[in-house]
Image (cartoon, rainbow, N blue to C red; front, side):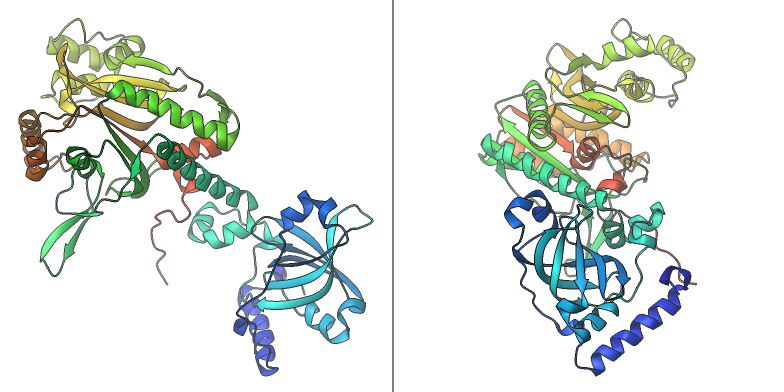
Length: 493
C-alpha cells in the first residue's frame, strides 16, 4: 500500500519499526556525525560539461523513489535543488541495494557516484554507494510538493521549504537584499552599530510597545519599537553616519503588511537633511534592483513598477488637493475643512486639529492611490514629534514618507535638534498618552539632555525591510517573507 493511502499513525509506526530494526543491527542513522560532500545538485546541472564522467559525493533529502526490480530511480534534494539518482543492485550489491529499497521518501542520504545523462536526457548520478544519514519518521506532503495549506505552511516552514522549492528562493533573495543594503551603506562610509532592544522608555516612533519585567532591577521594560533616539545620541557623540538593521517589536494588529516583530533599518547622517535622505532612498532601492534583481523595472502583483530615478515628489497638501480636492493651503477654517472632509468620507474626531485633519485626509484617501514610487513630504507638526519644523511654515515639518504599490515603505526627517522644541513636543505627546493614546510617545529626559549638548543638522531615514523584500520578491503578504511569522498557537485537544 502506498504511504499516501495510509493514515499518518500507520506510516509513523512502519517507519519506527524500520528504525528499530536498524538500531538492532547497529546501524542507527542518528549516530552518523559527518559526511563529506564535494558537489551540489544545481552546480552539477549548470556545469555538466565539467562534471560529466566524474565521481561526486552529494547529500540531501530523498524526495522521490521509483523501484524497478534490479534498478531504481530517485531524486535527491539539497540546498540548491534536486538531481536524479540511478541506483542498481549490480553497483551496490545485494545487501546494500536491499537496504536502499527500505529507505523512505524524506530520509536524508549521502551518495557517491558518477555524473551522466540518461537516455531520456536527464542529468543524473549513477550511484556507487548510498548511505542513510538520518531517518524521516513523518511522511512528506503527497508527492513532496503538495503542501498548499497556507496556515500550515507558515506554522511548519521546515516542511514548506522542502515541499515548495520557490519558497527557499524567496529567502535567498531576502538574504541578498539585506547584504546589499549593508554593502551600499558601508561603501558610503556608514558605520553599522547595535543599540538596546530592551528599553526603559519606548521611544522613536508612535506605536504600542510590548512590556516585560526585569526581575533584578524590579522594573518594567519595553521591547524597542525603534532605535531612533539611541542612534541620534551617537550623532551627538560624534559619529556622522550610522545605521542599524534589526528586529523591532510593536504590539499592534496583524495583517498582510504587519507582524508584531519585523525588520527595519534606520540610518542617520550628519550635515544633511530630508532631501539628502530622499536621494539616499532612491540610491538604495536602485542598487538593490541593479545588483539583486537585475532591473529597475519590476512586476508586483501584476503591476509594473519603475524604480528608476527620479521618483515623484509631492507635498502632503498638494497630494490631498490632487486626490481629494481639498486645499489645506488655502484655508485654516476648521468648520469649512471638516465639512469638506465629511463630504469626502474621511472619519475623524470632533476636536481634531488642522494638522491631524490634513494627515487623516491623506492617510484615508490618498495612500491607496500611490502605485509608483512617490515621496510625500511636508508633514504636519501634530503627527511628527521628532522632525524639524519647516522654516517657511511652522505648521509643517521637514519629513517625508515614501510609497510604492500603495504601501508606505519608509519614513524620514530633517531631525529635530532644538532641545527646547523637542521637550515641548514630548510634553504634548505625554498629554496625548494621558488622554488614552497608547501609541503617543513617552518623555525621554536623557534624549533631551543629549540634544542640550548640541546635535548637528542631521537627516534620518527608516525603511521597512520586510516590505522591501515583499516588493522585490512579488510577495502578497509579509508572512511570505518571514521565515517564522507570528502565529496564534493551536490548542491541543
